[in-house]
Length: 171
Image (cartoon, rainbow, N blue to C red):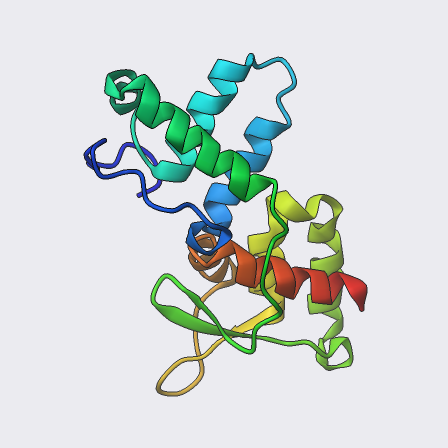
C-alpha cells in the first residue's frame, strides 16, 4: 500500500535509497516535482508522504527533527545518481518478468505500442515495460494481460525498470 500505511512514525526513518523506491512511488514523486506552484513545505510533506508511505496525520504528529531527517534523506537520494543497470529479470509484485532487449524480436504491435507510450516515458514506464517484458510463468505460457503486467510493474524496483527503459530508449 503506497499511501496511508499503518507505519509508526517512530519507525519510518530507514535509509532511503533508490533501491527502496518502486516505479509507482517514483511516478508520484515526478508528478509532485512538476508542480511549480507548491511552497517548499508542501513539497516536502508530499515527498515524505509518498516515499515513506505515511499519512498526512502521521506527518502532522511527527517531530520537526524527524521530519527534517526524512527530508534530508530524500534530498540526498534525489540528488545522487541513479545507480543500477539493465536487468535480465525484474521482480514485480511477486512475479518475474524478462525484458526483451532485441527490438528486432518485437512484433510490429509491440514496437508501435512501446513507441506510443514513450511520449511521456516516466508516466508510462510501467506500460512500456509491460509491452517489452514477458512474464515468466512457472508452468506453461503466461496469460497475464498487458494491463495486469503493467499493474505488477508499478511495484517493481524503480532502478531496475529505469535502467531497462534507458537501454530500450538508446536502441
